[in-house]
Length: 481
Image (cartoon, rainbow, N blue to C red):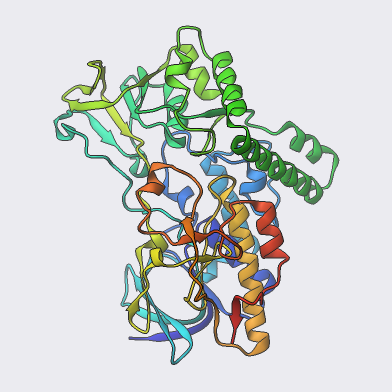
């Protein structure tokens, strides 16, 4: 099998992989690198999802890159604008020639003899080949692009209409004048309902349990004012810092005073809805705010669709699908021509590729994560995990920046191996600090967080910035040899 040699291999050309490529182009100019992407286009999530209304659920001043200002007046951006932004970034940093599309890394094996990773790459239209890389950055995200999560619904095959998972949305779907039932209560469902409500005959959100919904303007008045009076770079920096601090405060107060935040969100829902909608039944979750991710409703669009009567909400368990819709446990039948199963993601670690060291499989669930990015006892490999309680990109960029510093240090020292390892038993917990179903289902797939630094995954941008961007590289745990 043919083999080539490079310094850094980046796996994935979504928002994390593009960011990693840009950081390499900016700060590791003498290092060779390639980006392997399994799809035909860049963008990852933003190329995959085509459902109506697809958008960011974080503001673009933190979801975008710190080195490329977001210039649109909308900071809760449609998917198309995000994809355009990523394409602009790729062109500005001449990354397209580095991306190998429609190619999949099927396996990674560390050679202790040669001190490099051997990646087996399978192109869609050619013979497999190998890449030997000194360092690997896995930017594949955390979910399975091929398959979303679908519960085992009784009577699933009895339904005579269309059943659609948002992850596989048919671009030619005509739902005008149709009765639609959306099953789910997460960000996708909250986005779909207002986007489809104007065209559908009626749309019903069917949720098993409520979720917290936070309504905020789709445009940031402060950021737009700064953009009018300041140079773009300064306006971007100030808007970004404002968003970081505000998001951190909301998460902090949610964890320390959950009853206060619960009351605030309940009052918000009550003010946005008509009196005939039972707020405590449909918008009062059993868990505390930020035990699961808050759903965002820009300009209150979700509440507006319920208020207008174009959409309705039902909180109940599903008994079964029928030929003409969905029967709930309480006996209510929801008539439907189309059922949308917005039932969540299927977690997948490192894009499903096989990882081994000298032929011995690496089991991620047995590993601790160093600074939220490297697996204990596994050399020259970083795995990008973004935040679940803030913009994904904030952590992805910190990781990309650290990897570049680390690669430069390795080559400056003439070193072959960098690894964080410990022989000391550690208490550990879940890597990501949410109790969402998709994460609980994947507990045996993901590595663990320790309880003390540098093994604790803080999910806190300020702490991570101090540790990752400004902290020592060789801290006594991370060894370069």
